[in-house]
Length: 219
Image (cartoon, rainbow, N blue to C red; front, top):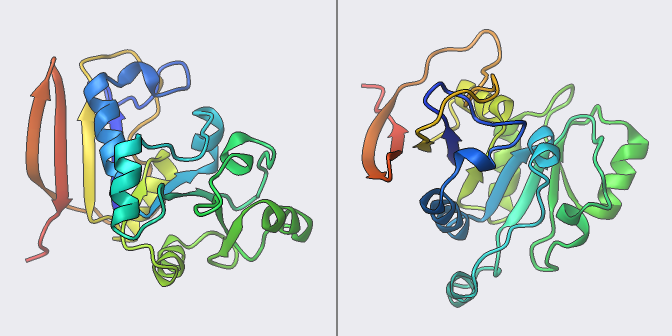
């Protein structure tokens, strides 16, 4: 389980509601690389709406490399939503490739009518009763053959992963900007234990810092 996030120097992860202004050409290339290595791209419903997600797209050479490795040309997009208040006619659902249909991760408490709509538009994973249990969701995804899951936010989804000790690796791009929205990288539920990570790699391009952290050995 890995995550990829970008933040400004003040910790903000969006400007005027979207992450685009914080990103760079190198950051976009990293995003495509990580997606090409993943089986599922996991996002929260609010991130889906705010960033206007479509299905995952990859350059042709990466598509062919995945096919040669016996994988679908692109990974699945999986949307976390307890309420299922989603636009089923949006590109994320109607433009998904047949071999990689969009998934929805929800809870058993979801409204039955909305759950029926979800099942007509996407593959549905029910994980948890009163709320979405991401640990259960990851087990369901693994049973479907997902060995690598990439989380792209938002802060509450990433916070839940960290709180449940499910995150193995974080790729964090630090953009040389300040003054964005007060939206942090992760918001953990209360109460939540601290999680420690170790820096595995770092790189710099055009004042943008690329950091790769891995979960630290508890010993």
